[in-house]
Image (tube, rainbow, N blue to C red; front, side, top):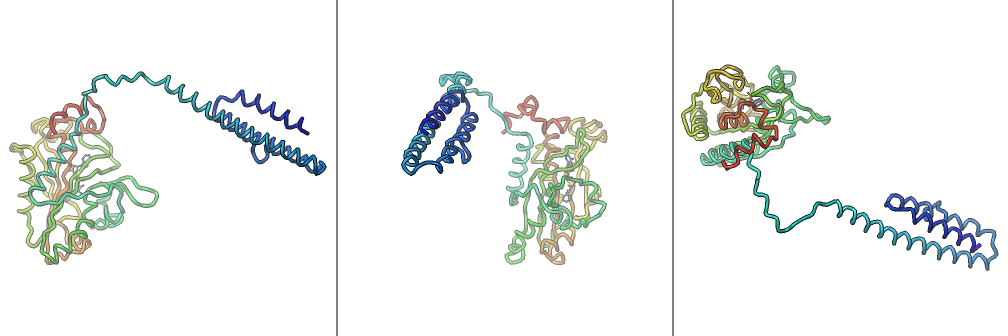
Length: 350
Ligand code: FA5
């Protein structure tokens, strides 16, 4: 019987010598020590032995089991060490005295204009809010007076998740949450709601020089007693003159959005072509930049605010387009390209 344990020991040692990876070693371990492994198998023959032989054989199998376990552990360490040495040999030489690479990255132009707009509105008492990129149908459409099957949804086709949520197609999707957050302070303490909320938006869009499927907007809302279109025009003018630091030709024309009444389109004269017409402005000389209007009574109601008592304005500034105009980027797609050649031009403007 001890011959059996001796011969299994021999076969194990030669198998072990061939293993040079963790996977191969694991296969050998299972073959010998697994539940149905060769060492366990030896015990099957015990039932035919005398009580005396059973004891001796049992001890021999246990010794073999211990030996096999130890040899596997030692081999595991050996393979690990060899793997580390192999990886080290592939690593490039590291010289701690090499000077640092001073070719640093830069802020993205959209980050730069976003921060600038945040500073401008903060200085006028607006809170800066952040909101999720994944929203519900209610937040993105229904709370904004856009019921299911309303034609206004066609302009904002977006990407839907299997659970019915969607990637927000405009920052207006946060309006309802903002009204609910600040309404108590408005109603009880008479504190006007003044908030901006920049964010990434997504649309199923045919892209061109001024349309991307992923772009940034910055929403702004103000709600109080007696807010009128003059307040809206004042804040829009102040923001544009602060951003561009020069006079910009602007036009305000009627625009339809179900969540404002009246609604406006605020366009700026294209700064790429000076208003002559080019691909960046769809050859019109004007660029749609910041639609806005007086918040629709139904939208205020959905946010828990009485439209008989309070009024407000809202705007949705196209931050990506603003970055294009401010930095003279002719094609909006360059901004998402990740091309350092384009983006590194803005390094010094922090
Ligand atoms: C809206 O998204 C409304 N939520 C804006 C609004 C808010 C109106 C509050 C009234 C009150 P619109 O789809 O026009 O509206 O987009 C607003 C701005 O976002 C556009 O003027 C443009 O500057 C920018 N924009 C829209 N689609 C794209 C796009 N595909 N790529 C880049 N910028 C875009």
